[in-house]
Length: 210
Length: 210
DNA sequence: TGCTTAGTGTGACCTTCGTCACCTACCGGC
DNA sequence: GCCGGTAGGTGACGAAGGTCACACTAAGCA
Image (cartoon, rainbow over all chains, first blue to last red; front, side, top):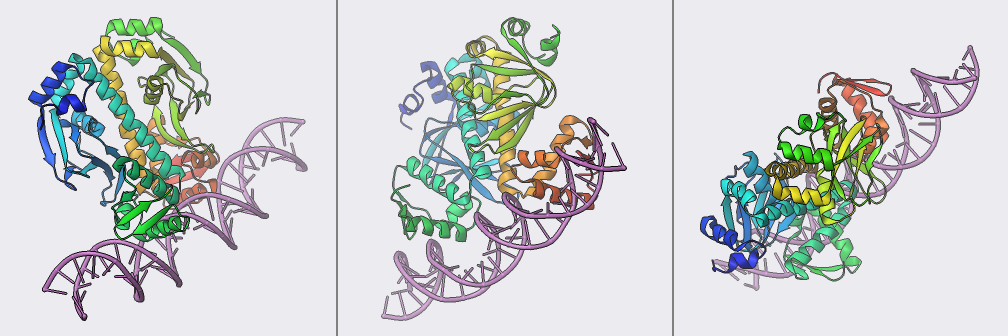
């Protein structure tokens, strides 16, 4: 890792905190599609994203998964904070969408820094806050919206996060992430294509107008 | 309020913090079924529950609501923390289930105390944590489970929280809280009665075995 | 070039759930 | 005891979405 990555990604942290992270954190790299954490795993550290992009999923016992939100560089996994602090198993799955570098902070430091660095405690709080709101909006969608709206929202998120109008993804994958089935997604996408909202290609969806 | 209520409900707080809460917090009382906060409202304070019981709902634009979780004495509303801190409108609705007393802490104190009192910052963090987990479990239910399982889970929660096997509630209310319709709930309850899991009365449900 | 395979399109069918209509049972007040 | 209001029961129907079967097609490769 470049020495400048931490100040770059976490500019709000005090100099000493940035140094401590540099010295005490453990850097780990993941390739595209690699899992950062598995459902059922225990944590002994929390993770800050340095580079790349991470997707967070919820999984149930039968292996059904579905997409909750993205984590960008400069963000942290709120769940790893929860689980680390409570010594609980992870109830989520995290997957690298691009090649990703994270830095792992051991639990005891996380607690220590809460008292020591104001910017750290502020960071932890605002991480919870942001993820909390994501969850609320997720709940809204699955509780109140139909699959058509959810699909459209999903594509929009994907588009914004990846900053591209050409999403290279297949229907099956979308179905998994929305906890639906391929046929349903195919049909809805077809309908959206007829409305001129997008154009379908093999292994790719071109967003026209959402 | 009894002078002893705050130490009783929040024994983990430092003495000085308890005193500050006593002096600076504003106590408010709500009758059963009264709303503590409405969707769309702005916050300038966060609320700690002293006595009673509070239900937290999510509402969408069309007025559909549904139940997320209970708040007991000694707990705080994580949402009011989020909203207060971000100067955002509330996206939830809170209703007193029993006669309830809360104490409102102005936003600026909330921030000040984060730095000043370790027990306060720990309290705020663990409030987020606890609510975060509730939300995750809520998501699981609406994403992966059918209405039958959700109903059973709802009754179980209700039973545990109220510490009684005789729930005085009607079908319409349950339907609202699960964002379903009375007929569906009635049918499912009937089926559960046939399985011997409960006994139906007018305005009441007697839990036998869930 | 032809074969293979993953990705996609589509019709038929089923289940779950929401909605409508209407009925019955119970409770409280007069 | 009658009456009106509220809670609950039930059948009919429709929409959304999951499942199954199978056809089609672009890419990749031998």
